[in-house]
Length: 258
Image (cartoon, rainbow, N blue to C red; front, side, top):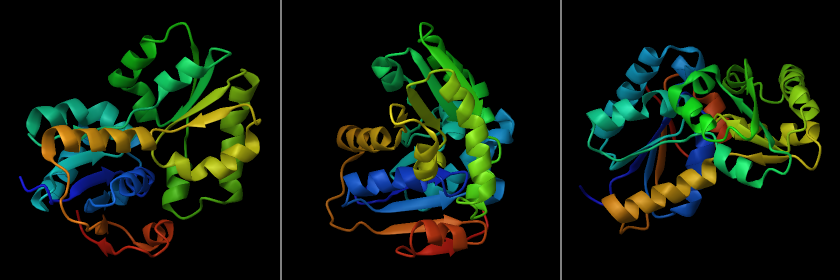
C-alpha cells in the first residue's frame, strides 16, 4: 500500500470532525477523506445489526477511495461494530471509546459522569470497560436529542441549553468531578457545558488520544506520508451547509449519495 494514500474517517454525521481536527493538527502531512453519514444520524438509536451494516458501507466506500487506514470517529460505531470490521477487513482500524480510564485515574471523588448515546451505553464493549472500574461510581446519561440538534444546525439554540441543563444537573448533584463526553459530536458543546458545570469539574473527550493512536499505527503498520500535502476532502449525504459551517468553509464539502 502506498504510504501517501489518505486516512479515511467516518462518523454518523458531522461530529467526527472533532476527531478529524485532532488528526489533521497532529499529522499535517497526511491526506484525509471524511464521510459524514448524516442521513442515518444518530447511530445511537439504531440496532447493533444496523450499526454494523452502516459501518461496513462506510468502510467499503473509503476503501474504494484508496484509504490506507480507517478511523471510526463515532463512539457508537466503535463500541458496536469495531470487532466485526476488524474481522472482515485487512486495513487497520482505529476506534473511539469514552475516556473512562483517565477520568477514573484522576477523580478525587471517585464519581464520574458520562454523557453518551444509548447505543454506546448499551454496548458490550462499553459495559466491559465500565466493569473494570467497579470502585468508581459512573453516572450515565443518554444525550437524547443532542446529536439531532447539532446535525440540524441548532447547536446554540434554547432547546440545546435546556437539554444540557437537564442532563448535567443530576451529575453535578451526584458530586462528579469528571465529565466524559462519549460521543464525537459533543466536544462542539464544550463552551455551553462549561457555562453549566462548576469550575472544579473537568471535561474529557477522546480526540487527542485517537490522533496519537493514529500516529502510532501509521508508524508501526502503514507508514507515514512522504509528501507535504494535507489535502482534506469531506463527503456528506445530506445538505452540506451545516458541515461547511463547522469547517468554516475552509475545505471542500461534496454532497454524495451513500
